[in-house]
Length: 119
Image 1 (cartoon, one colour):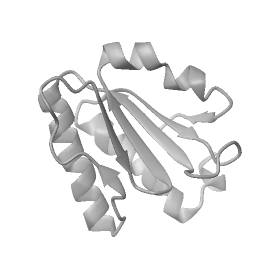
Image 2: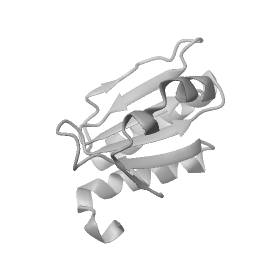
Image 3: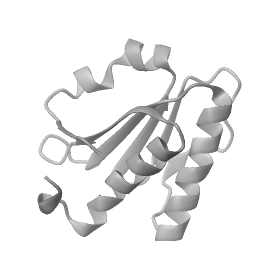
């Protein structure tokens, strides 16, 4: 699969690795290019706490700045009761979710036609 990725899209895999390296759990990359027009990839990960979510969000934003990727939408501060954080990098949308939120919204099932890339 990696041979079919454009160079710019490798960022989705790099972000997934970054999240996993910082203890994000059940990290997946969903390739939406064949079924969606407004983004190419979802990166979805489960976080253990709001503090964990905030830290991962900071690492994601640092990565985006370093690579020159504009952040189109991202929360400035995570509230104590937030269970889902979305960061929109244009062709990559990152979902950091609590275990409860992830099982409730079931994004993998909702977007089941997407190709899952094992990062």
